[in-house]
Image 1 (cartoon, rainbow, N blue to C red):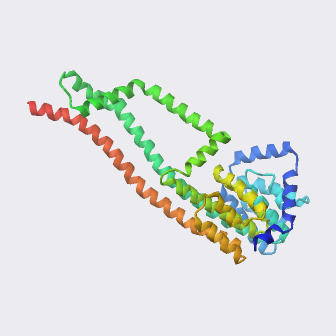
Image 2 (cartoon, one colour):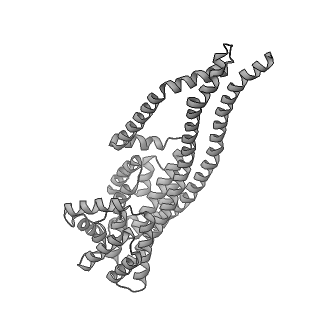
Image 3 (cartoon, helix red, strand yellow):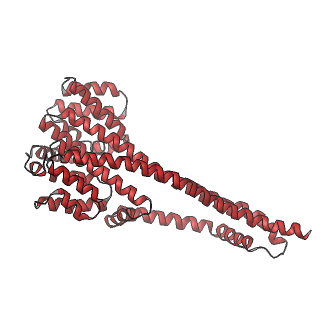
Length: 382
C-alpha cells in the first residue's frame, strides 16, 4: 500500500487507541500495573496466547468463549488471571484492545494498537498471528544477542575474579619465601610482588570504588541525557556497534511492516515504532523522520537524511514505495538483517572466546613465570 494511501486512511484505529488510553481510572490502572510487574509474564507466554487466540477465532469461535477457553487452558499460570480479567471486560462490552490496554506491563503499546487496528478492519485473527510471529522472532533474536554479549562478559568477570584471588591470597604466601631470602629477584617477580601487595592492601578500597562507579553509571543511565549518551556510544563500540544497529533495524522495520499491514497510518506507525525502539538515540532520529513525512516527504528519503541507516535500507524502502509494496519491503529488510544479526552474534562469540582464554592464559603464564624464575636461579646456585 503506498505511503499516500496510508496517510489518507481512516483514523478509526487511531480513535480506538485514544479510547484505550483514557479507559478506566488511574488508581485501578496503577494497582493492575504493579500486580502485573510482580507476575513477570514472559514474551513467549504472550506469543503463545496470541497464537492460540488467533487459532480459536479462525475456527469460528466467538471472542468471549475463546478467551474462556484460554483461561481454562492456562489454568494456574500467572497469565490466566490477566486473561480472565480481559474476558470479563470484553463480556461487559469493552473492545479487546481496551481490555488488554489495562495491562501495559504484559501487552505493549505495539500489541494494543495493532489489535485495535485489527478490530477496526475486521482482521483480528490475522493481526494476532502476525503479532505472535513478530514477538517470537524478536525473542529469539534478543536471546542470540544477549548470549553474544553475556558469555564473553561472564568470562571476563570470572577471569578477573580468579586473578584477583590469586594475587590477594595465593601469590603473597609464595613470594614471602623469596623476600625472606634477601636475594635480588628478577623483574617479573618484583612486579608481581608489587601488584600483589597493592591489591592486598587496597582490595576493600578497590571494591568500594568499583561499586561506586557501577552505581554512578546505573544512576546516570536512568537520566535522559545519560541514556542518550550511552545509547549513542553503543553504536560506536568496536565489533558490537554494528550488531546493536542491525538489531534495532530489525526491530524498527518489522514493527513498521506489521503496523502498516494492519492498516495503521504511517505517522501513527512511526510514533508506535518509536516506543518499541530500545536505543533512545535511534528513537530520537525517528522524530525527524516523522516530521519529514508529515511535511510530505517520503519515508525512504526521511530515513536517508538521518544518516544512521545503511543505504540498502532506504533504497529497499524506496523500491517498495514505487511498487506499492512498502509493508513487504519492510518485512524483507527485517528478515535480511535478522539473519545477519544471528550470524554476527555467532561470529563474535567464536572470536571473543579464544581471545579471552588467550589473555587469561597470558596473565596466568606471567604469574607462573614470575614465581618459577627465582626458583631456577636458586637451583643454579646450588
